[in-house]
Length: 60
Image (cartoon, rainbow, N blue to C red; front, side):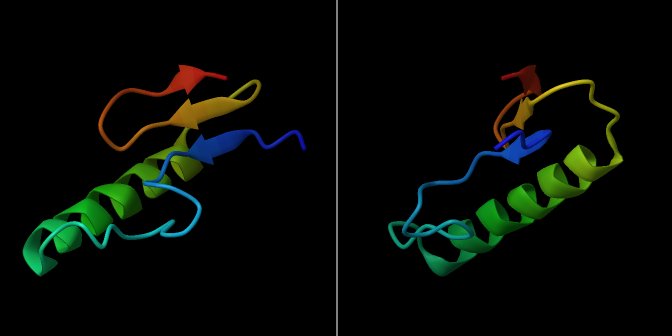
């Protein structure tokens, strides 16, 4: 599809959450996801780049 920025999530059924976590852990996970999405939007990329909330951005 040519998506220049990809933010990894837990999976297709739960793209912005994780039902296996308790409510406080899930809140923290969602916060990390939002922070990484904002970082992805503010980062200049020259090709498809994967942003992982648990790590650094890497070319796809």
